[in-house]
Image (cartoon, rainbow, N blue to C red; front, side, top):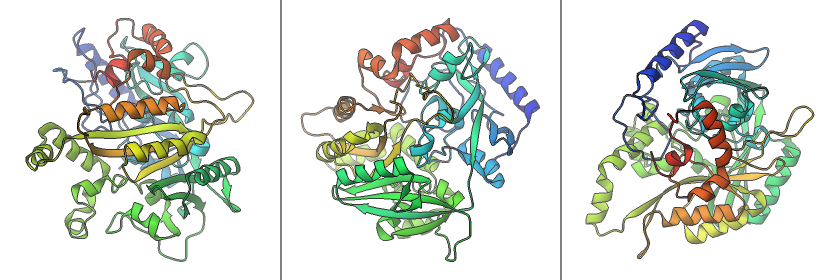
Length: 465
């Protein structure tokens, strides 16, 4: 349950964090001592205690009139929403999984169905405090002497420091959400509908507040159009935390109504569709699987156990099955190239379903151009589609582990896209620097981490350090 911790408790927690930083020997890796993660990049164990982040997991304060909140970096979106929603407010973008932290969504990336109008989570940040590699807490703002840190921090994954406090904008929401699932059989037509919704923010005369979709088969895709609803519905709202599975409902019904809370976490209960790998969608298993354990973080821990002990991999090897390559990625592809990518993906990868989430950089509310974020440089005024696919595929005869991920990277780059760095990456240094603003990252890191205490982004994302 989210709490408002207050400024005094926050200051004490920051002091503990700085003391733990000072206790790490020079030359030793600096990492967070946290129990949960939404990363899928394995890393080498450091052998040293990480930074003490205890007490940095709540909301410092909320200003309902100004629609802002000061939030600690380790606060999960689940706890953040628990504080803001009673005021009829939520963050402008609430990533799909409950245990994603605000600091993680800013230092990494986050996305959701409101991203076609609100951009990415870091675009609603007003200022943030960062524990830098020099051991100092620096307040980064959009303008002034720390603007370089402010704009380079998103997608830096701890290579520039760790957010201790983030001030964010909030937006009002009512208590319910109407959903409409629109089936499209042609990918080019899907792209046209997405562009029309993004431009008009409506579909067939109805306002659209949230937009995402699922590709189930080459000729079967759905766009889910969400519209905030003020009045309570006459019919019962759907509950996908019980026996019903949300993603299956997209195929089964044209319309739906959820509470706003359940809409925000509709994907978390079954980790999109990945819970099926654990049998959690089988009716008999689901009845026995405690509701409190139908959560993405539980499934993520099960994946972690498999990665450490390789029980399923050994069983499959004994059955004569080929080894499998992990293909867990989110990529951003320009909308006009998305049908091309999806066709390539269907032919060469073949994983299904695939999540689709349109996004655009947030347009400025006043005069001026949209801010460019050099560590993840998307083009202002361009609609992209986040394509998410998570699973494993058999390694073909003569191929090696990683070959398919490399092919995906090459294809996405060729189409003018990018990919998130929370999972495996294989780029060479030159390509990586070109895609993720390497020269700018180095310049900003030199300023705020002059002794190179923090692991650089390429070493983290590609070399897994």
